[in-house]
Picture (cartoon, rainbow, N blue to C red):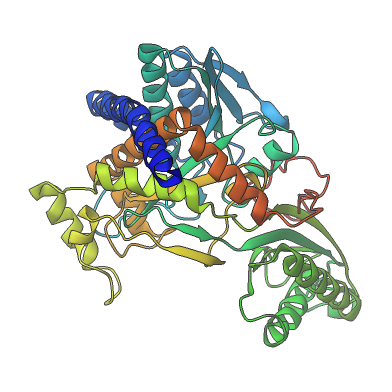
Length: 489
């Protein structure tokens, strides 16, 4: 008897859910058609941001363009949030229902630029480029948010939809300041995406990361006429680097430490009284990052003592490791499979083949752009870091990537800048926007998905854990992309 009742209940549940599933599928078709119909407009927005290539916390025009695009579609805009002039929250709401957030980035990388060509061709006088595809990221997220808003209007679906305009992901940790300001405290689920060289939506983590600029001060003098009177700030930097490089043998093997000397002096015959080095420390565990970073600080202090200089440092950013959410990622992967990958025209294929010829020998074939990668769960942190991670510790979060670049292309390369500035990048944007929009529909229409995502999120958070951002209590480093100079920043 009990088995019969169970079967009847299951049948009734399926009968009840079937119309909901059909309705959700109709909504997904609706948002996909909307994005296709407006793909040219979104491509123009993305490519304008590509042209501007504004770096972290200085993305004034890029942020304003995205805000205006969303405002024109009926979103209310709160600009300058979390003490960041280029950060914003765009919101649209009706009735009662879940609150869904979509993240959008738009900062470029300094020191790399490239024209829209398949051979190395820097643009003269341009100091930055979208080598990580954030022009597509921000615009694709806006496209998804707008499509979902139209679906909500059309169907009467209740809830709140937000797009978060998040500046300075590249080393500035914009989202961390937004998390610290409480901007995600009332959100049920957050969705995001990233430019990439393939289409995937697996569940994976990232490396926690903390960075700082170490600034050494010494005494200037004539390097030949009075060297005994000088104390070289550059010597301090080099001594620090030597000691940190020796540390590499004595840190957990998953650790990554890298640096760049941002200022080392102006002339060989002038002993520099100021020098600066910018460090990143990464590890899968935020606690390991904290302890290794403190060892780097001690190396800096020892270097200053040994060279007769002084040193201080400024923490620039700090990020947690990304918390994967399998429940949400499975939903996003299913939608990505429905959308499919990036199909090249003959002209795009010729461009892709030319780019592919410049890549490493083990680069996958360009046909990979049309494929969707299998669903994988990888708990270990990968090689990169992202400030999405801090969001993921506060809210169940899911992301994906699409083939905005030629398969085998590395982020932060001229090949990524080039492809992201073409129709190949624009097509990847459309794949991502559709996938995000369709996943948002799942979240709005499936309370079971939200419940599963939240339950998994709670399981991953250590008991008694309290969020302590790795940036500490510092204000956003709005000038971190400005070049170092003699006398300090």
